[in-house]
Amino acid sequence: MSVEQNKWGIVFCPKSGALRPQSKWEKVEKCLREKGISYDFVQSENSSSVDRLVKMMINNGYKTIVIVGGDSAFNDAVNCLMMTPKEIRDTVRLGVIPNGLMNDFAHFWDIKDNEIAECVDMIEKGRVRKVDLGCIRYTNQKNEKCHRYFLNCLSIGLVASVIRQRRRASGSFGWRKLAFIPSSLLMIFQRLEYKMKLRIDTDVIDRKVMTVCIGNAQGYGFTPSAVPYNGLLDVSVVYHPEVVQLIEGFYLLYSGKILNHRSVHPYRTREIFVDKAERALVGIDGRVMNSPVGPFKVNVEQEVINFIIP
Image 1 (spheres, rainbow, N blue to C red):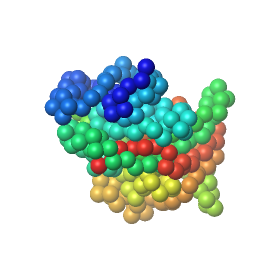
Image 2: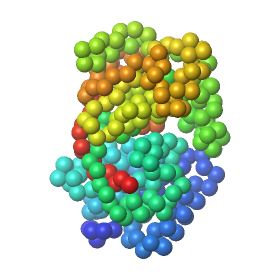
Image 3: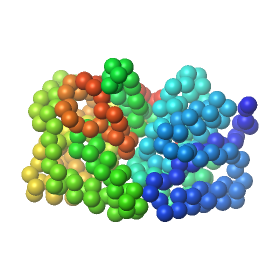
Image 4: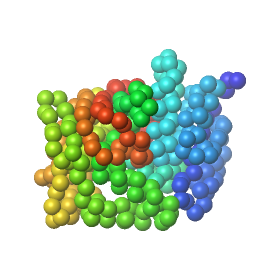
């Protein structure tokens, strides 16, 4: 079955822990009808169903696919699209209406969480930019060679632990800002270090590290200068700060100046090799993944996705 050229395919991903998860879709649907947008809509049952629904839309010929969801849902959509042949992928445009616990890739483009009419107008205008993707290439627990793409960032160590804690807290607290409080406390009091060995260009880092953030975009504040269209990844390697430095670090993080912190060591590169990251969790676009077994590599693939921007 094929669809008309201008019809949108929309995947609605209800926000985890929301009191009325359908309320966002009701607002989006009202706006679409008022503007006379032609669309078909499906709702994801859970986080594992997004890629299946996006694949269905690609196979049925939708050229504009809109994700009403957050970073993790958009990550699933991108990874599904990257499994299709290039000649098909180049005909598909991805758009986003933020509706997640984390919407940082949308925020990079100044796409606001609650400005639904503006989001719909943006997608209708259809201004497209080719964007880069980061990619982790690793071996899983079954000794299979795998890879996974990311739009915003990949984190190793404490930030990945914070992401996991934040998602758990969101289910209890419901409200995003409240959910971040216990996660922030974790950063202060759970002073973890991980023995890592990293190779970044000609530099070799072989020591204890608190966290590493590899950003294709802003990386939840840890790679504030990263942009997803220069063919490079920004890397922030964070060593173990003292308590006073942690407090300073929070201020610099929230003010977008984390790279000025003495414990943060920034790099810009096309690829990074992680030879060792003992016991460290790995997070990718707001979700903790099954940690790779053994060494892994992270690189950038330039201008591979058509993304609708303001």
